[in-house]
Length: 112
Image 1 (cartoon, rainbow, N blue to C red):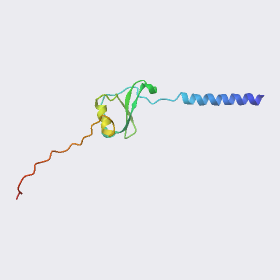
Image 2: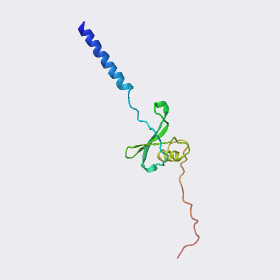
Image 3: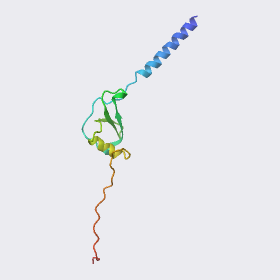
């Protein structure tokens, strides 16, 4: 009888610590955003933070070459949109046209 009681309490404690470990995970959220433009040359990736994921504010999270997370406002036609377009060629809504130099007219006759 003592063995069954002891094993019950052991299983109950293991289950409760297992549940507590997975319900109290810390979220890595932006708590504020900065409107200072970030150079696209230092950004390697980005993600969109939403409030549905448990974070307090929506934000754009840029990851730099050094592994730092920089929090910016959502992309609403501002500098954030431009940075996203520069680092992500497949992003819908981004226009990617090559800038070509105007061609010079060829002169007739050869220079001597």
